[in-house]
Image (tube, rainbow, N blue to C red; front, side, top):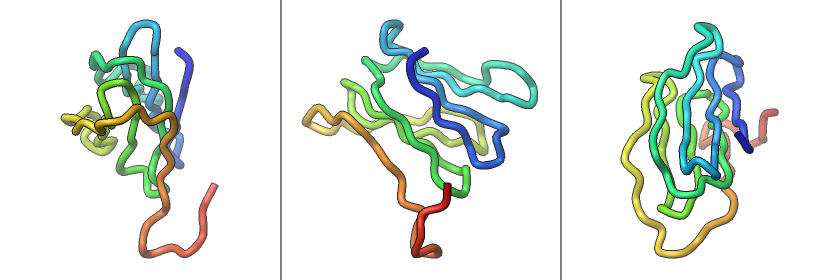
Length: 98
């Protein structure tokens, strides 16, 4: 694994494995892999401040992750190679929360 993005409550994490071309969702409370999917060279991931969504950037585009359902969703293509992703907290908060 090369990257880890954790939810604010620390119950789930998204792990990127670029050498294996894979993304995994970890259920940290249950100490298990909740879901995993093949995804071309994932390079960066970020989790929303409410812990609902995560986004992973890779060669295939952006992978959207539903952390409440603990499943990986279909990804749209980007058309270009992105190298990083960040999630703004949304319209309800004018500041970043760490």
